[in-house]
Image (tube, rainbow, N blue to C red; front, side):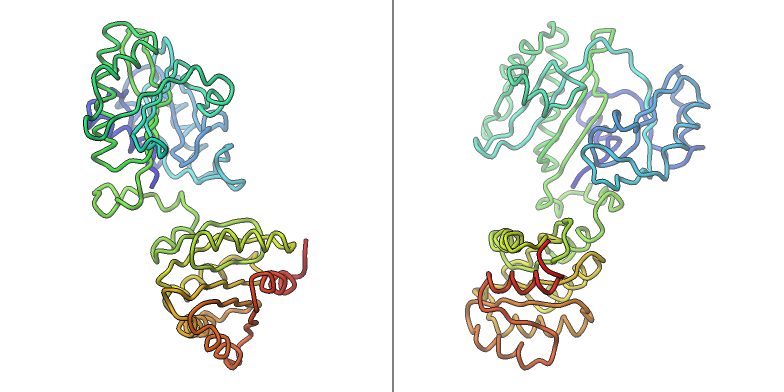
Length: 388
């Protein structure tokens, strides 16, 4: 689950990480009121969307008057922001953050993530803040400094000092960085984060450090124990992917016209590959999981058929945990319930596969059985209108 910048900053404040005053607004009048309440002579109006690159895409406006703040909020709210990290349709702007403008001497980058190779929470820091860290890593990796945190010992003071020296900070700044790093680590562990970024972590003209931006990703598997789970902004998510999560379906929207319904992530990837190899274009990645039931299959069909681009459906199920005859029953019930009006090709393999195929053949429904995965791919590509 992703958080908006204003939500991330509220957590930063709770953990003793310095931020500048700011307030979220959902209307232009609210934005104007916040600017007046914050005071000062300059403000930033920042679109709150789950996509990076907002500034370059016009999602961050610098304003020198309250009237400019109101106008900027009016121009942004209710529109779609297209960035290099969003889809072509962009992300809806339903909220803006009104921030006090800062007087910046230098911009740093600071982040933490789970490094799966070392099985450690790893902090990354760089003096090349305010830039795309991916570009920095690709072109000048020597500018990125890292420390890995032992899960038993936790973050150590010598590690914070090491990053402070690497970032060329003075004594006072290194002490403040240590406080920020310890706060980030507590936040990371307490809230089950998978990623946190501050870009930029600014050195202000008075020499102090402040988080001017914030990005937080939370591990979905731990949301059941997190009170901030209700901070999720469903408007920033693909509607089909959001519905799939409610039924524990792993779904990702793609650009093709052949929908795939498979049990098992590896089998799903292989299915998409062979569809592509046969000249088709997958419309989605959909893993219904090992414990396939009629209800989950029905919901999967509903999600699939809600995509107007889908011209055919390939169901590829391995009956290991669940028998193929039970899977066939679920498929037939789902097709009847949903009213599927596009061709459906089914490939079953595993326990009671012959019984399952027989049930599908005698169902009277427009379901085509396939002998193997290659046969299924050829049939579904033909049903969708042929190879591209």
